[in-house]
Amino acid sequence: MSKKIQAIRGMNDILPSQSPVWQYLEGTVAELLAAYGYGEIRMPIVEPTNLFKRSIGEVTDIVEKEMYTFDDRNGDSLTLRPEGTAGCVRACEEHGLLYNQTQRVWYTGPMFRYERPQKGRYRQFYQIGVETFGIATPDIDAEVILLTARLWQQLGLSDSVTLQLNSLGSNEARAHYRQALVDYLTANKELLDEDSLRRLDSNPLRVLDSKNPAMQEMLAGAPSLFDYLDDDSREHFEQLRRILDAAGVQYEINPRLVRGLDYYCKTVFEWVTDELGAQGTVCAGGRYDGLVEQLGGKATPAVGFAMGVERLILLLESLQRVPAEVYQAVDVYVCAVGDNTDIAAMLLSDHVRNEQNWLRVQTHCGGGSFKSQMKKADKSGARFALLLGEDEVAQQLVSVKDLRGELEQVQMPQQNVAAWLAQYIN
Ligand code: ATP
Ligand code: MG
Image (cartoon, rainbow, N blue to C red; front, top):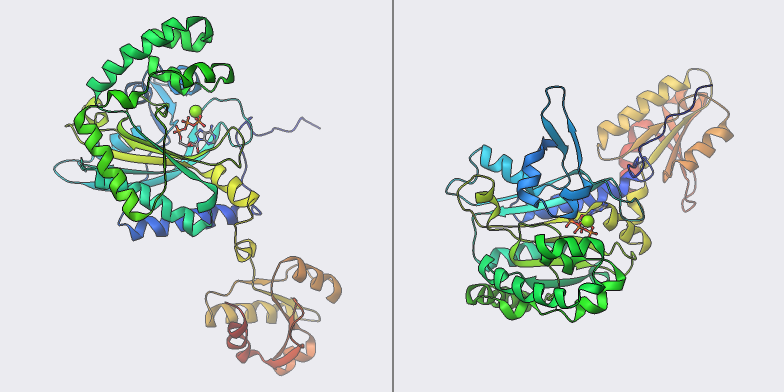
């Protein structure tokens, strides 16, 4: 026998037993975003490598060591998208969606990063992303934060996530800060790890983003970006805070929150949880006013965020916040025992689907004894089993059994059963 081929490390199958939770989450988000007037956009999974180098930044974890990059048969360098913002900007720009107008869009799909796989960190993972374009005022920063807060509420996660907020200021403010930070880090050079030493010259802000526990104490003493903010960024941040306060959304200001990508300015935020160990950020984003221009478009203010779908699902499951009915795939299971009853079962199943098109009806296939069919009915999770024997078929009747044990078994004309079931299943 030849050796079995297995999935690539860090790339997961999502099985039928798991996908109901995915659909529940994705469905909840889709409805929520529709309620805010956001439109869905779908981009390719593969983009030119330069798109990511130019947007995310050359000196970032993603571009330095996490991208799946390859040459296609034509010799062009392509990359499996590590995130969605760059592709979304490219697509909107390419199709003229950013020209003298505002846009609010969202997307979902797989992203790819060559990271060390562990709980909540994979090489193919899914994000739900939201991007807005053309609005420079802090009301839109507030809107994208408020809509995530509403999502946590709908998912029952409000008590398990906290909002961290910071402002990165303007490019000029960051340049001033950069010098102060470099001075501080240089004075503490002996405490820097290899990555950080390299970044001291190329991208010192990124050092603040380090997850190395040995550096945390030293980093806690670093000068605060907050003290270097320009007036415009400060007022922008204050107005954002006023809206969040008025809406009753709580937050912590974290002056060391800088985010792992180069393109952010002004507002940055993360929603974090204590429930998932080191992989605690479930949603992250901010303002990136410079990116559209950086990618060759006309200067366009923008705000967005991305949620990690696997992390949210881990959170929903570990806190048992998924409603029980989400896991239920079938409402009614149709069994048939006796000569030619299988045909009647097929027709009855379709009759029920025709009459009550939201009922989920599974027809038993493959024959077998009454007892074995009832076992399958029970395992299907259905609330009711419909039973057809030769007598029932001859008289156009059906017996209905409550598999969850509340009602007596009843017999009724087949034509009544759909309406009868609909009374009990919602
Ligand atoms: P982290 O600090 O955990 O590496 P990040 O800053 O690299 O996250 P972003 O690029 O901001 O992450 O992506 C947004 C969200 O996508 C993250 O907050 C997280 O929920 C999720 N995410 C990022 N990388 C992964 C991954 N490798 N596996 C699963 N989810 C991920
Ligand atoms: Mg990362």
